[in-house]
Image (cartoon, rainbow, N blue to C red):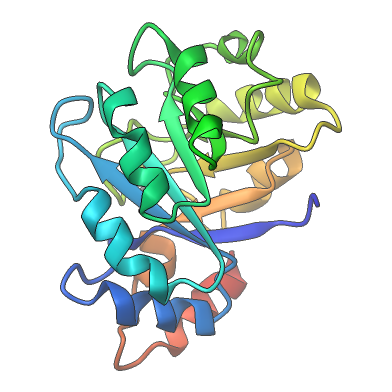
Length: 218
Ligand code: DX5
Ligand code: ZN
């Protein structure tokens, strides 16, 4: 299904109210919920771990899309799978054994995602296409929300779509997605758009209508 799906990142929501934020943004039209896990080591910021994922799972009706910005990854795969993640995405740069990591994610019963940092060439996917259900093109350097979209990644998305062809692999964009950049990456072949500040900006749990307006604007 190549229709465009919007995946709001709870990184840009109220950390004291994840359950209510998720329910509000789903009611306003979110397709997936994107969950950014950061360890202060692979990326220069810390968010939360598998216990938080488990706690928010019952509040998510749709797809729980967990983006692991952690190294090492392998010791934590079972815990994130047990937390109820539908998709677990690991970074190609997070260790020397991404093939093994992707195998372990599927082995734990989740769909496997592969994320590429902006500086990583698209050829990093070449021997992994039969191992992945999603490829995430980072259009910012991971670690923080609200950064500027890196234009050079559009050509990477086009090259990735050519490699993926009609295989049932989602192409996800993460970082700097706005009403201006979303059409560019959609035209380049992406089908899942992560958006943090562009969705949660201007609204709140008490006044969630802007979330819906923001989603429709993307
Ligand atoms: C960055 C995260 C993104 C981030 C996107 O490390 O992976 O998911 O939340 O935030 P915006 O949409 O604000 O660029
Ligand atoms: Zn992310």
